[in-house]
Image 1 (tube, rainbow, N blue to C red):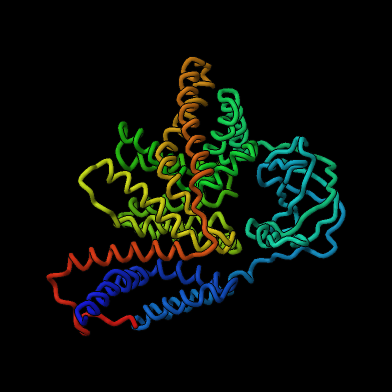
Image 2: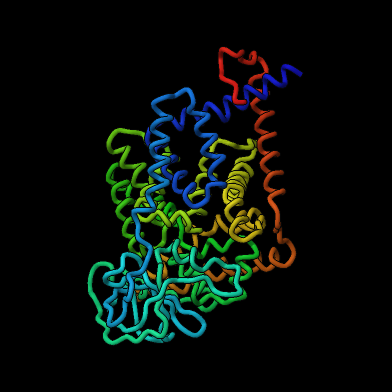
Length: 494
């Protein structure tokens, strides 16, 4: 019994305590972690209190680090007070504004986010559905700007949702007096995006064209409600929300191509330029894409400077940079899900079930990645939706391996469409139609017959216990011939 207790203590020390200690005593990790925890504590002290307490316990014997950690906890706590989220009083009359994101069509109108002169943050309004308005247009309008308030008889926190995307006010019954088109690099990128979407619409039939535009550009406005519901039920709605996964595919593809012609440094530089262009192409309001782009930049900038940057450190640093720009982004569900999904995948990167067959090993790797992302984001999705969808563990297993091929086919369709090579476009269309028919079949079968949803966290805890148990017995087997460390070799956690 004492041997088992020693082995458990040894496991907890080597697998959790010592790794956390080593990680948190890297200054940049400590600064980013404590700053983020300070922001979390400002918005929800109960949520972050346990994490802060655990962090300080780990740093208890590291005097310089514990003081540094406390300093940035305090900075994170007070940082939001430097940002004004209130509207000016009596802000009436004519207003000048710039459209800051692509207007989003709704059932009866179009939602527009504006940057109004004299107001620090953004303003929301709705215009007629077919009113010709695009991103970066400058307008003059009349209307009373009022603070965003929660809707009556609704549990949805509409005010917090808008605050998380930097929207603090709204204009009802807006009247646009004047509209001016602007021409700059961002408008040219948006024009190119619109043109590419038209190429896809002209090459693929529905619902394939809408699905392809969702995968390539994150535009889900024309996807049918039935298909959206299937994607949500099967846990793969993320494939039509451009994210860090798309960024990694683009970076890998550009690097692979250029590395055949250039040296490694130049290939990395060109690939980074492409993903930065992609970030502006998709839009800076897409926080997961911005986070993934910055993460890649920090990793490879470190290599250029002769410093190896840990992937988790780069993840923390990129997320912290975004929160420094606007701390209320910590309430943004897309950013939280993207960050925690990536964190879960990185943490479980070395955890593997080894089997002799290479193909089965690869399948296990895909399953592990999907499982890690779902487990690491489950607490966020449960807090937001009071439900966890585990169906994605199965659906992602079938769908995700085809996404790079779909993106490549979509990109080639656009290229050959612009070159007026209709025969090649036709062959690509056949390929995409076959893949999408497989998608529809899988989502229909799973949506109808195999939905794994839960209104509690019990299943997640069971999965975690199973994973930890497996890892513990593997650890025990590897250390069975070694003596458990005595009290002089490690500090007890409890």
